[in-house]
Amino acid sequence: MSMLVLEAFIAVIVSWVLAQFLKVVSHYARTKKWNWSLFIQEAGFPSSHSSTVASITMFVFLAGGLSMLFMVSLVFSGIVVRDALGLRRRAGQHAKLLNILIKNGNIQFHRLNELMGHSPLQVIGGVVLGAAVATGIYFI
Image (cartoon, rainbow, N blue to C red; front, side, top):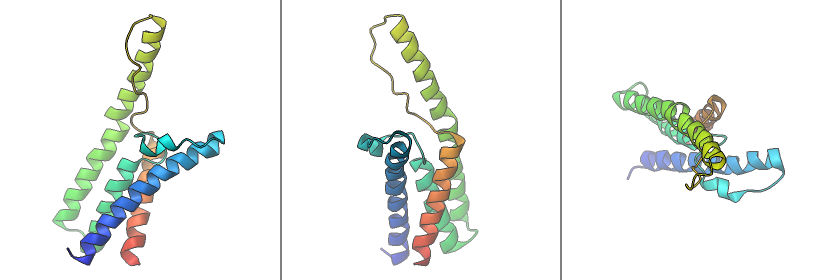
């Protein structure tokens, strides 16, 4: 495995870990309570999905410029980001509404996960984090 591939892999892992850790820290900043279960949650600030795809896309760009691989990575990243902002976010909003209906209608059904998808700010935060981590690791 070349050193460049290893560095790209490290950038992706560091981006994901930092994004997940920042979810715990941002929750603490709002509530003054540590909630380490957020480290494995899918929603929150920043988006770890956006962070990981942004880091690999940035690393591909830094290593190879405007190449076919960069274009493929950019399209893939766009799909992931769009999914986080669109479908998964709406699914979380629907789950929230369904949980209210289940509770008020006294329906016997398990509680649905409402923490899905991301706000635009959460996605932007993830993209900035991922790009910054990849740039930092590339130039170290």
